[in-house]
Image (cartoon, rainbow, N blue to C red; front, side):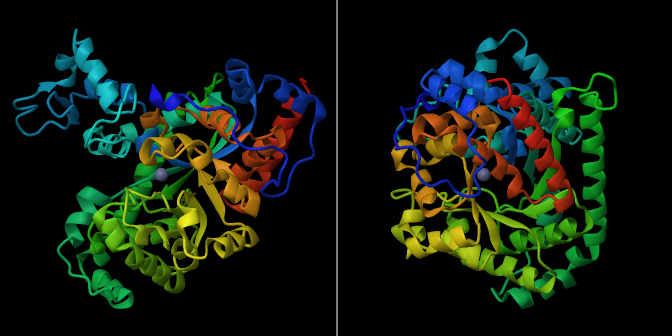
Length: 472
Ligand SMILES: [Zn+2]
């Protein structure tokens, strides 16, 4: 369980706090200071503490391995015991493989191996296989029937609700591998984003776009309905996930060919305009991948073109999820800057390599002045980049006055929850109660949800904090 062990507080307390700070509450602060070094009491305290939102939560990464396995057993999917993967049956059923149900009957060893493979449980890096490899390799190995989309949302919402999390922005990829990708993968791109836009829209993709959008919206309707049904949201005994407000972020995959990334981003731009459940967009997949690096500036230019021609949308971008040694040093110098200045990112996912950016001090100043919030994912940062404790730039952002909120990234792969991330923040970065509370509010303040809903959520959070703090 390597990734669950953390050091003690590493930084001094009482310095600058990122943005507007709620007034300190002496009773609750005194209680917090008295238990901050006791892990189990801290867990209890933070579990109950109201948490505004989790703004960086990939739906596929949020699902715990046990759920992928259970759905495979229930839905007649197959298990590849060599690859440790779930596969869909073909025309000949599972062919040379067994169904999940048959393969896993009385086979705890295989079950354990799958859980370990679909997460970082018991993972120890070995030569040629890093935490980064283990983490990202999970996603091609798991799959489920389409109707399980709603089950994934239900599971994630309930885990949030149990911890007093009010709001989720779930990153989700729709209409990519089976629809948009085969339509556009062979279309050559020139690199001129205006001309390439016209090329894509003049292709069969452009003609099919209304149909693709309508299907995506129906799938979201179905997922929301199934989530409500699974959690009993319309009954007298709703489960905790029913109280969690949910929105989605459109998620193109940055490791695919340029035509696919662009067409999928165009689809997302329309989806965000037509469906207010999709409140923003965010490029996903390893930022250090060869294509992701090669096309980084092209992707920013594509987003910029759509932003200027089709209209403004909310953009958050994984940027600076890199570290010295993982990539050539030149890759560390411009990603965060370009995400903000060219890609119109209002929030930055990770931002880990900030101090390697060219003129990072002025970039930090710009981020603070323009309230570009950083989505801090501490467990993921340690697992994927090996960056934790005082090596993580939390303190750099704090000193600069850049707002931050904590998020889970992939809680099912990391086998964590948001409370765990708040704990790490206290243990590794020495947050005070007031700083934690500020981060909790930032999870709503910088959400992409519409302003009316946001105001309601913040009001509700005020009430929840008043109730929470009245106990001390
Ligand atoms: Zn992420």
